[in-house]
Image (cartoon, rainbow, N blue to C red; front, side):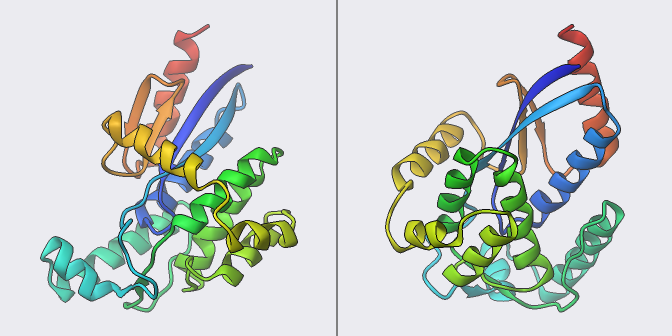
Length: 216
């Protein structure tokens, strides 16, 4: 069995990151000969977002100059892509964009716990935000996601109440920005090969198969 290190650089408020992860998971299911060491690395789409967040329509209009009609069409396309890989996006058209730094601090801690806890937490956070319309800024939402991932809820609350892992998360964010990652998801294999965007499972499968074969 070939082992590949996969760094999945993403934000928990990025819909294409949720799609990309679901696609990557499907690709790995088709590759029993590949063992993936999956690490989730932090990236903030909106690092300066204030507490309480911002209405998503207002945010997208300001940031990308798109119309509400264009945004609605994009949301429908995202829902369809999500459904094709088994991820459910909420059906309502409006929502809010939030600051996600605390979620990344919790994900950093989860990685240290081993046993796939970080992966489980990442999926729980995607579900909370995109499927259940819950805020990744609210500590109780984060604690519940941690509990779903099999993590200690008391310890999660302690971390969120302070500033633990802030330097480590800032360092990792800076590292990937300095190395040219300015859009997510970015999937980096064995620290050398980059796959950008929420690709279909077939794209991930082909790339992983080729890389595994080349390294034998």
